[in-house]
Image (cartoon, rainbow, N blue to C red; front, side, top):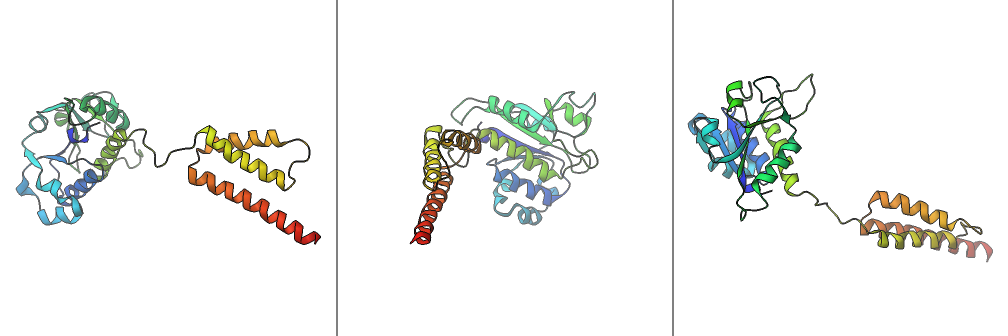
Amino acid sequence: MDLKKICIILVRPEESRNIGAACRAMANNGINDMRIVGKRTDYNDEKIHILAIHAGSIWEQAHFYASITEAASDCTLSAGTTRRRGKHRKGKLLLPEEFASKASDITGINSVDKGGVVAAVFGNERTGLTDAEMAECTLGVTIPSSEEFASLNLSHAVQIICYHLFREKNKGITGYTPLSLSRLDKTVTNIADNLQKIGFFSVTGRTDMEKFWRSILSRAALSESEAKYIEKIFTKTAGLVSKNSQYHYS
């Protein structure tokens, strides 16, 4: 996924503050290309910058167009976001994660690749995208929400779509490296050794206990620091039991 080939198109936004919040949502997820169907003079710079915080440059560099067709003229795909379904609403609507996967295939891995540009199109806060505007898009995307209150704030919708695109780019990356089973076995051995030191096993039982801990800890996908902390707990417990036993019998 090349996020430099993702553009966010806002169609006739009414509220300047929502544009600022959308800028911040885009910046949170590494997306900088904002395009607006409308005129720059229709919006209040100060209100936009207040909500954009440090993402005001996205607004400053935004481009303005007369229509979605014009705004997406260099795009390979333009996805209109909508909560409404119907004959004139693109039929099947993709979920955000499905759209992100398709966008990844089109944009390529990085700017060196010759991938295409993909647009995510968002309608007016009050009415959303009209049927005619949806017709200008090549497919539809919907964000599931409560039927009792299905309408999302514009910037929230932008955040959700941008987040899915960002996550698709970083697919497979976790906040830590889970332990391999060979490393996990060292923790299991530590647990069993220390339980044996305090007399937890009589004659048999160690093998079953090791299988139990291996099964539990493998499902937990422990980090190195978590494994060491568990080892420390059992080692310290065995040490305290031994020390208290010596004191009791002395």
